[in-house]
Length: 95
Image (cartoon, rainbow, N blue to C red; front, side, top):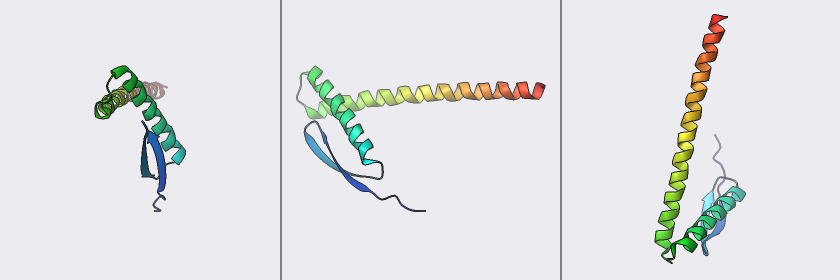
């Protein structure tokens, strides 16, 4: 088993530069950082506070909410798929 090579990627989020190591595609890391930067800037413009810690927490809560929604949708799709699989098996058995 080969260990993926880690690459150093520099991104800027809310005027702060961060360096990180990733075994993912650096372009994907840049895109994610850009999305986080946009979210933080949006929250900062609406919050009326310059407190980066508070803004970051609000951004994390927003992302956690999106993740939970995606997990619920995935569970629903899995359950629906399982039910359809069971129905198809019953149909095949009846033939």
